[in-house]
Image (cartoon, rainbow, N blue to C red; front, top):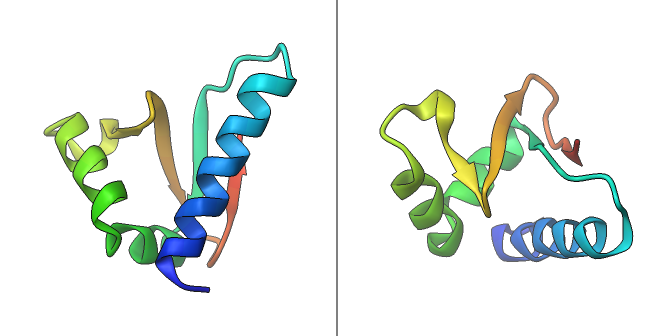
Length: 77
């Protein structure tokens, strides 16, 4: 899966869950390979890098990012 389609999938999931559920989203769970692919996309990487100096506190669309050991995991909590 290319990084642009992966970014579109992530954005569509965030939009879907934020509009359809009453449960507030807290963080994004991203597998390490999916994270590497997303960081190649300039729209994602610019927002993530500029969100915080500390890599453990970086955010995308005001949601914390948690990088996991799974290859291509892409989930929301």
